[in-house]
Length: 290
Image (cartoon, rainbow, N blue to C red; front, side, top):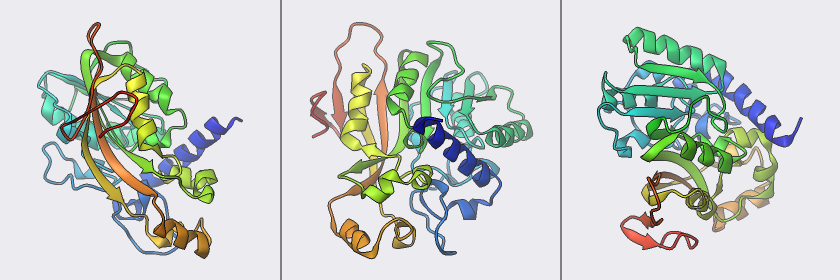
């Protein structure tokens, strides 16, 4: 088995376990990984509870942002939610697109798909469907979606460039995405990078912020905007599972930053120029955001 498939299997196993737990247990660390104690941390989660379309039974506490808040979803849109879990973001998207729109959730964990379908049936939503599949090989035709959303999922996929290429493929011309994810500024300690278990806990699977934005640019997206950014502090109770005390102190005193970002970008509709913006500042495609 190659490394990429091994990591996918670890993530699938972890998220199968998460689907069987209570939300409070899932909040115990980054994107649902476990800790070495019984302490509970809310490291990444944003509060969905006052968001239109929110369904408590579908919220497993695994997100790192609110991508639907920035997604500019209109009534009648077709929306795809990548890594849809128990359906929370899909149901929020359905609130925005209305009964005349369509929402497709994609997840590769069968128990998550099952939970999401049960939730959709309870709500009586006949325009929300959930498909089993990998987001780096989506079970969706070309040029289908007006909007794509995703919440703390791409960092779990080994081949992020392939996912972004798939996003470009399935978006309609002039369609757009809003994705919340985990990125880095500075290098992670080697022990975190190489630990497959920590990969499933989000941090080791994250890539450099500049690299992440460049992958989007390289695929031809335009009008890229950093909609939200917040620092993520990983508690020592988690890090001590992977680092010696010396490495832990060096990590905390160093220049490595772990961030949750929400990124927006549009698929061009023709021969259009590519531009990037962040917080209202212009950037060069290869140079990162100013």
